[in-house]
Image (cartoon, rainbow, N blue to C red; front, top):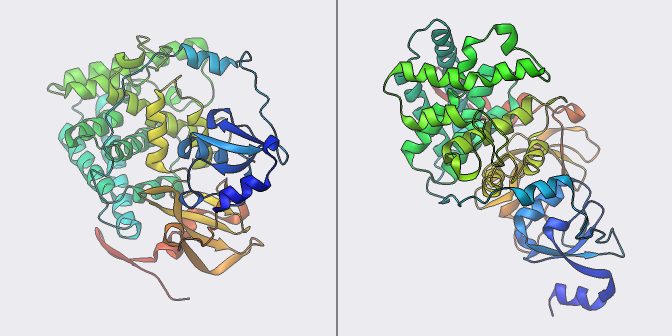
Length: 440
């Protein structure tokens, strides 16, 4: 008799309810899943839903679960009580599914081998886009050949190992200016497109188009571009004009890929039709423009929140709430899978009380990442970090499951300062570098 059968026999049937994952709420106690526990990061003896990360993980992994109403909250939702968000989602248009082809581009390097190349490409993108923005402001050519060259270098790096760029973006202090926003958005979009197996030339157009999506802002004053906080009505109407200005800049460039112009024109449109400038909805928006908008929105959540910078896991949770409204549901689910529930560079607390930093995803088990444990259970910094690769555990051995994500800086843990301890000291000159870990 299996463990599940024994537990069901011992349980009071009246206390167990089968619940669709879409109906889960905080406070419930999950006692059984619709898939083997060993394929998940959850403790086999059941667990309370204490934060949105738990609920979101279950929504990706399962279709339904069993809850024990004797140990946690019950199902109180009535079908006739719909929230404003759920009502809006019911009115959202249907969208044709994008063809997904996972594992088209297998990883060929580790994060340690690729992280310095990713950092170098980012700095080159920063220099090149700075020049392009200045050129647009002064009515000069943007230098499209150089942008294409760097876009392809970005794609090559992402294909070798996307977690290198994810680590760099999540651990480096890049600020929230439009220049950084465009570069980071382009990289997020590239990571996503590689994950879902887009053709190389589509990824190239997506990367360049996302880099240039806000090029129209070059024509605005620096004070306007640097403004933080909500726009007043007149300011917002002025801001919307950057889309048309950007399209005009690219048309003057000459022979620009129509897919790039489409991205610039439609990257502020929304799935529910409430975007601008044309109020397009659903499949009226090109797939590349939808991905560019998704990547931009994720970056805004990370760096442009009214709060302090959000943790990657929290930003993903916020993005999930926008499904069927700003974005087609399929895109949101796949984007979350591309980054993992806990992306590289995320600070996490384990069920043991220890704190770690997510280093890299396991490509086929993206909810059980590789983690570098950096504190003891009492939150004291370890002299020697311990690497946990959850998928290398033997069958039956318990996971050190992730309890929750933590804001960067919690318990004095800044992932950027741990780069050398995690990957080793960088040695070399220019592009020829390697990392060597010292022995403790």
